[in-house]
Image (cartoon, rainbow, N blue to C red; front, side):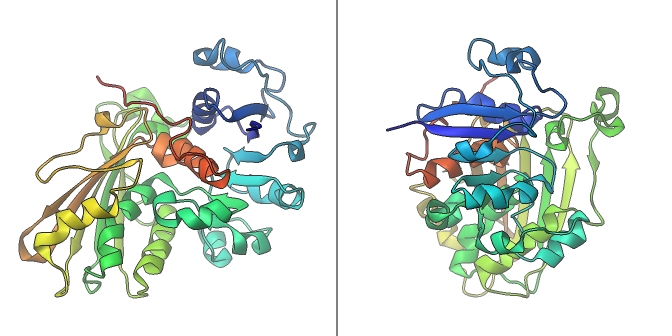
Length: 348
């Protein structure tokens, strides 16, 4: 098989270097171009010594490269960049995978409200696929444009999908998502709140009054349940670690739910999923058990008064971002889901 020619727009951030780490050893990929306005001409391995001897490319100025020569282009960029360049790429037959939010929300008005940007290509947005392979794998296979999910939504949606599909959630009570992420989730930029002296030995909530992932999660919960009455309380927290995400989900079961079958339902739902691990009853997933890998682990705990707690962990930069993007690419090009992603977690 001829190798897939890959372009990466915005290769200097954490999701960009994570894409490079995974794609550089992907057996079906040829890295074609990596862009950066600020670092054009700089060899990639000078910025990221971990890639010495593996990635020989230098960063290119996005104004001077022809991305239409690629088969697929990943956008590891701020919100708004992908939608500005997607029309030309789509017209040229290039597949697009955006790791930002440009194609996650089907409602352009909701996007504009939360991201304070006008959406410039709503026609492409209508055809874009929400890239959560375990839920929308068939659509991903046929897609030309993928909106790669946010990291928090990945944990919440995969954690709740089996109950949503069974119709076992009581929507008269809000779903509660108590989520915690490592500092790398804030990106590779200089901010006081992510300085070592500020983030270390500290745990704090943020986005309590409203986080951009809230409308994304809520839209998908409504779609999966077919119920517009879904209520969601979502509170993210910053935890003093580099990688890792743990979301604790609390839901109330309705009268149709079969409490004794919940563990079995989860195991059967994800039985054929390469990257979702439903742990045995009574187990407690830890972030270190997925560090550096594309694996998401979860455990299900029935509680008193018809409540259920689901604990979900993932590496926010892999399954929560770049690894999931590669997983989507594999589906789009009819490759094995695990191609380029057979990375075992790092422990300790």
